[in-house]
Length: 50
View 1 (cartoon, rainbow, N blue to C red):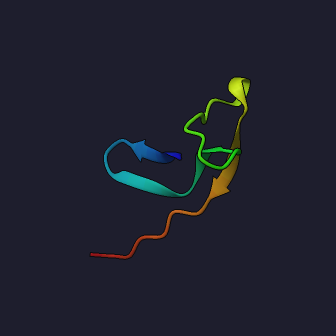
View 2 (view 1 turned 45 degrees about the vertical axis):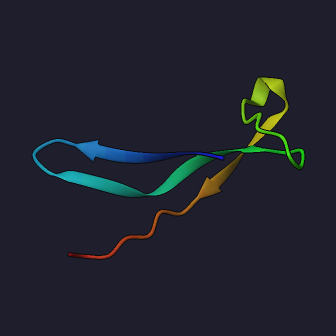
View 3 (view 1 turned 180 degrees about the horizontal axis):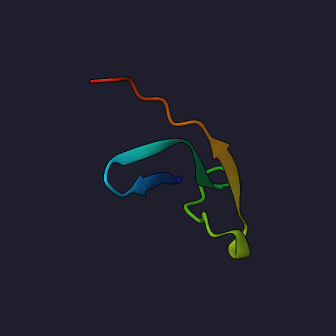
């Protein structure tokens, strides 16, 4: 699995509540690249106020 969150960086830093996760589609595989048989899934990023 390869998680790629989206973060806006400017005067403030903001984490967007969504990301792209690349996943291996075959059990036991480490390949997450879509051109080599991997896949993608949408991911929600949950975080709280500090």
